[in-house]
Length: 255
Image (cartoon, rainbow, N blue to C red; front, side, top):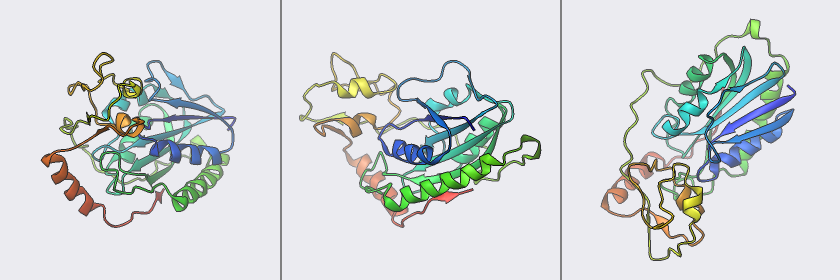
């Protein structure tokens, strides 16, 4: 493949680390499309000498609703695609199957898939040191295996890749946990610039539009003073539940 088009969404940075590690091990020139910078609003075609690497974080067992329309703009007439789900050590649910369904409907052949772990964005004490060296080594090994798949890729011999997941996919639920700013806020407006859905007011950066917020935690991860975060009884209760479900270290899985 002459070029690998890399499409990813990484609000808190963990997905980006996995993305760059895998992409760096793939043969070919890389063309990056970060959905944090802008959504895909025009057709992105995977040409005959190209392949796609699609990397998405997992939100409640699916890819983010914010990203779905962008993914629907990716098309390829029998071109190969690699899909990766990045999750916070609990469960990646049907995220890989959802990506495969979307891309298959748009003419792309999913030839490889992986599920990798990064620090949980909503509960950062979970998998707080991941991806670690073992994860990044696994990502590079996955890239090496993908190179072999791409080298012998033949659309006429393609068979649908079996990945975990169940249909119908669960409905998207409204985010009830919204990050707030503490008195550490200096109104530097880093959060305003980083928010992909423009849910934070430039005039009043401590305010969050709860109808727009998708809970991606970009503002939390990038705040230079650590002023943004979550609190309250509901957050504490959910944190305890998720912590129990994510106690055991999960290992990367590849297909």
